[in-house]
Structure formats: C-alpha cells, structure tokens
Image 1: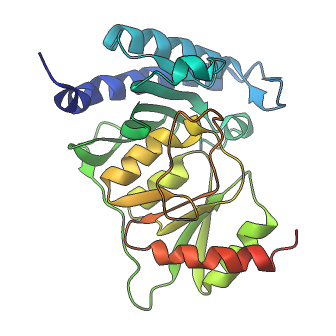
Image 2 (image 1 turned 90 degrees about the vertical axis):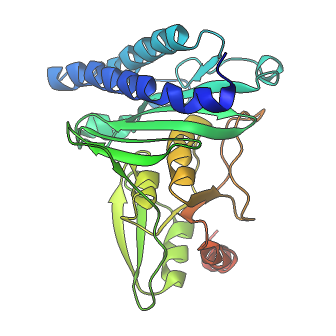
Length: 278
C-alpha cells in the first residue's frame, strides 16, 4: 500500500485536472454575464460560480481520496472540536478573488491545498481566464503551466545587489500600514494583483516580496503557500514562522512572502507600524 509521502505527489496530477474542471465551470458563469452575486453574512460576495466550483471540487476530492476530509470556504462551519482531530485535510477556496471575478479583470483563481499536521504539502492554483496553473507537492517541486504548453519548474528569487525590490500588492485591499512599509523599503517596483496569484508571482521569481497586513483566511493562502515552499520561498508571520493551518480561528495573521533567505525584509515591519497612522 502506498505510504502518505508517496501518495502526496501521486495525487497532484488528479488535483490539477480537478482544478481545471472547476475553472471551466467558473468560466461558464463568467461568460454568461450573470454572476448571480449575493452577499454572505460577513458582507463578502458570493456568486453562482463560487457554488458551482465548490460542488465540483468537493465531489471530485471525495472520489479521489474518500478518507481525507474537506474544508471549503463555502462549507466552513465545521466545529473545531471535529477539525482538531484531522491529521490531514483538503483546504479549498473554490473561487479566490470573487471581487476580481465581479470586476471581470481575470485575476481570480481556484485554490486546492492538502494540509498535513498544519502545513500545506500540496497546492494547486488555477487562473481560468489566464489558463495558467501553478502547482506543487512535497518532494515533487513547483511548476507553472500556461495553457497546453509543457509545465516549467519555478523558483523564488533572491534580490540581486543594486536591484530594486519587486513588490506585489493586493489590488482590492490596500491600507496605510502597507503603504508605510513599502516606503521604508526604499527603491522598489510595485505591481498590483488580485487573489492568490500574488503569492505565485513570488514563487515564480516575478516578484521578490509580498507583504499582507490586511485580513485573509486560511483557504486564501494554503494552496499558493505550498507552491511557495516548494519553490524555495516562505510565507511567514512577523516572527519568521511559517503560517499554520487548521487553527480554531481560521483567520491568518499578517504575513510576508519572499525567498526563504530574504527574511531580513521583515525588519521593516516594526518601523512601518510605528510610522503608519493608527
């Protein structure tokens, strides 16, 4: 019988295929021009595409690995007393970047992660409008695939001497503290992006640094976090500790994404916090 370490990379092609199927379901709604948008209890948007993707992914994962429980943004009301017993589980955001979906800018993704003992060990991030898929698994490396082209390995990049820091920031969530942090970095180039694609840009070496001081949930980051780790990067809190998943409260702390050897960028945080207007 296949052990869990061998099983994780073996699951990856199936999960990639499932994420792309979910992306196809999203695109049916996207092209229809009627997202059927409503608001959830926390005032975050919900569309027909979120629900279609959720149903397809949950059914697909249940067939693929019936022994592994699933936590999806659209079915997140599982008590911690139940979740606390999970050694491994699927963590899913069926449509990350719903605001970007509604704006129709194409910067939204399907996120599927496998979490084991609180760490993401497999992740697939698929952007259906871009037809771009980032994926990784423990012991298998990190890759990007554009359309039908062959997948290419990716890796996070260190900052070369004299090179401006390439920073990626949220398109829909900006704040005074992030602005202050970026000012403290000195010379830098900044690009705005939606959804978990921001983390993937760091994983692929297209950006050096992604600071996120605003609120996020575990399903927003887990899949891309797995890609970043496999690409030689880190998704860490202000102490340098990697984000941990399946907490009693599913909110993430503030986090920072960079090459694992560029954590000195975090030294800018305390000064940025002091400088920012509270």
